[in-house]
Length: 190
Image 1 (cartoon, rainbow, N blue to C red):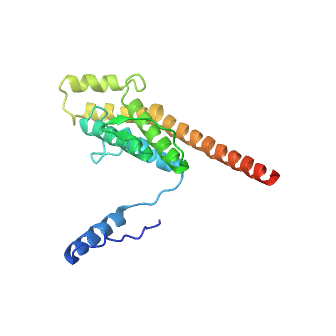
Image 2: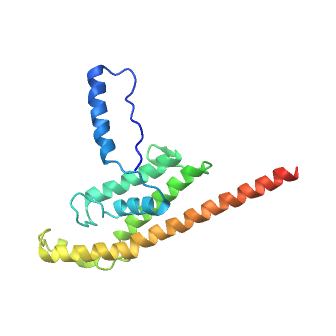
Image 3: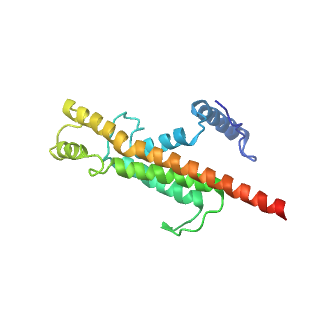
């Protein structure tokens, strides 16, 4: 695990600096450094799919989770710097790391949408019927169907998105390596 040094902004009064440093240290204690496209993609895909909730229960029809999807969309757009009054203007992305961030965010959004789609996860229809019939949200039947829906969503929506992200990431890396080799050959021939 690797920690990033936390430095408070300059110009704060001493009492605010102390409070901010205390908060920053609290945050640092819970941050975990993760490397590799697959674990990072898995984390974001699970969040987008509603599987990393404080409730510990898959809730594909939750308004809170749709808000999380909206935040991911904004993050993806912010990563490439193309938002303007909630309208996206797509521009070519030149920075490699921005392309990688965009790839991970897009994979997460795809996983989130697929995990909530009854076409992708058929058991969601059963869960919808239970909720529509005012079945209590914590009943044993609801919990069991929710667990099965989560497993189905994981297998049919999240994992394929993670695999696709990893495959595309490797292709992007190989493409960059080939381009660099080609450029170096051109420079040597000059």
